[in-house]
Length: 294
Image (cartoon, rainbow, N blue to C red; front, side):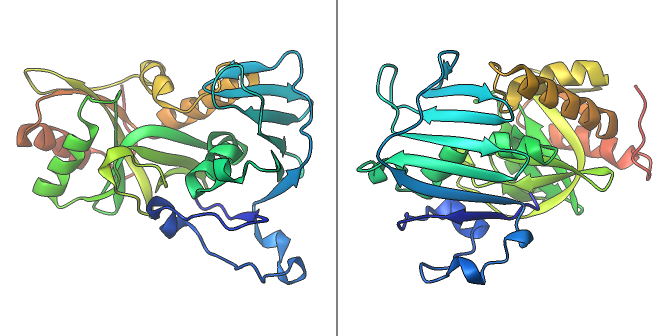
């Protein structure tokens, strides 16, 4: 994503294979005096505590977590199941670009792996601070540009990405998740350390050429979506905290920018070469300046 996040941990965690390409390990002997904090976009610190801050009364329970907003901070309490006591929380200070992750002593095993620590931070909230989105999509790089296939699970994202790899020699950068960030007036697509069952996690990027919304069908059909219609298709495939009005408004604003600058197509298709050719022909007909009409 073009982001540099400094993570300070009081104990070693196991680095899972999907995270290896995305990490640079400073080592346990790296003292804070030797770190240039200004070189990082975000500073994340994990600290052991004897007691967590109390969860506010207005906290919202969602997907095993308690969320609440207090001023400019989002307080996130991690839970295993409904009714369990929180064992960790993250205090996000957007203005100072600092996250403080607190955990109760004895719960190190619950934050033992790189993926668990990433979940504790809440990467989707990090992205929003830097004009970025996390999209449920397979990301391929073709002719140095990014094509993203998005759809609900089981619709055929990985299949279409595989067909592009087979017939067009496209590179699969990520099989299930992609980052999209507005930078220098254009949208860049990124691989992420989340890829589902595909096992493809590459820390690489490409300018976003097109987003393809997939639907299974008996015949191959391709249609350019109006930006408003495109937002309706993309919103469910983004990582969204629907409990937080400001979060959802930011996501919609970013999607409005994205769909105004990057064409979004609806591809009703079979898993065959004809579907590839249909998209390829349209992309090759695009004007060189990337403009398109509805």
